[in-house]
Length: 310
Image (tube, one colour):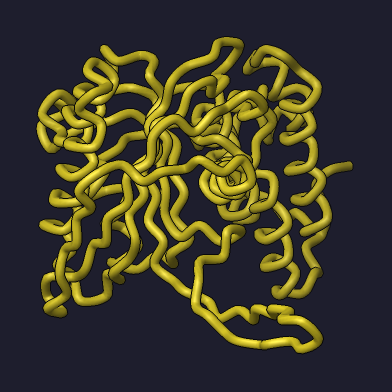
């Protein structure tokens, strides 16, 4: 019987929420981004400071040369390795007209006129600098990149990458001179720790392109400016977000509302959440009635879940 006497300790619920968070963050959908054949075609680098902190904007005059195969390999790793669980967005604006979004305009110019790449990278840096007014926003190096052969779904597309490195780390370098060794230290960028980034895929232009985002900041005001203020994005209504949204509703019902209507143990809550995740792992299409029968099983629970919007 699913419904049991609730005699579990309150602390278990915290474990339950953390346990489920792993699944809610990564709902099972087809992997949609691949970089096996991706090439780095163009690169421009600028430095963007914080206006409020009296930091400047330093713009490069030309493209940055990347003529070394090993360097390109390391840059591709730095720029792209963080996009492991793609969550897709599109450009928007305050009035919902994405065509008024400056980032959409810059991207459109680059995709339509490749020769304007460096000029538009300068415009991107200037725009970011104008928005970098919150005192907690860190200065950093801005990399604007043009990629080719980014696989989205089953097709290869060009893409624009915008990446910001805000932290430097110390590292040791050991040089050998004849029979002696010279040890020195330098500050540099950790290629396995991208602070902020986005990929603009050259597809679905008429709906604001497809955009992926990386932001390693915490959920402070400083963190929000990258996605919400600078990029101005909204979630796409694709399989990922629909699955994530539905699992979120299910999670809220099971962890918050269910215990108010029924005496249910934490073990049973975990079992319900496991079954909800298992459904999406084992079914290619979603059928609401089928989901209710396999996950909730009990008519009382099904009616309660339906009333809660599940």
